[in-house]
Amino acid sequence: MAQKAGLGWTGKHSLILDKEAGSWFFLGELLVNIPLPVDEPSQDECGKCRACITSCPTQAIVEDTIVDARRCISYLTIEFDGVIPEEFRKPMGNRIYGCDDCQLVCPWNRFASVTEQEDFHRREALEPADLVTLFNWTETEFLESMQGSAIRRIGHLQWLRNLAIAMGNAPYSTKIIDALEKRLHLSSILDVHIEWALDQQKQQLEKVTPALGTQQQRLIRIIEKGLPRDA
Image (cartoon, rainbow, N blue to C red; front, top):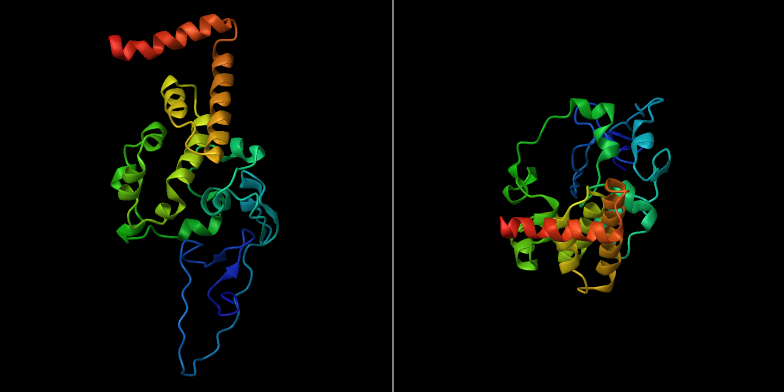
């Protein structure tokens, strides 16, 4: 409908594109009872470009203008509240709410300007925060920090689920392991992702210290945990 109304053309990533704004805009609708001139449909301007298709971390764009939501990180982290399939967890990287890779690589978005609407700017609560800090937020802290934000609607448990995957993909850290272990048994769905993340952290430790035995690795971890306290 938007393309037929002349607002832009449907890009291969399925989003409406405009020559000046790229895909960084919202579509609105007015219901009126007055006659208006009919606009000409927009023409496809993507040409042979396939940047969005080749850049998708999970190959969710299965063909031109068609996205398989079951593979899309935006769908998985925002709309989907179940267990995220393991095949998509590594490709998710540190994306904890949505994914705009298909838009970031689109050549037409080079011409888009940054919005002046402060509601769309990064929140102060997110400026200095790392994964562990965000994961340690209580539900109250999450709700207060995300007040008025679309992020709030996914809820605290889904927020933790997404962060757990990101922490599993992060470099080995005893802080990450401690934070993950403290969140076990809050929900069966969350536990699946925490256990996966803990296993990923363990694998990274083994890569860092391949020559060390299990007891030596455990001793190193105990010492590392005690250093900040004993310093």
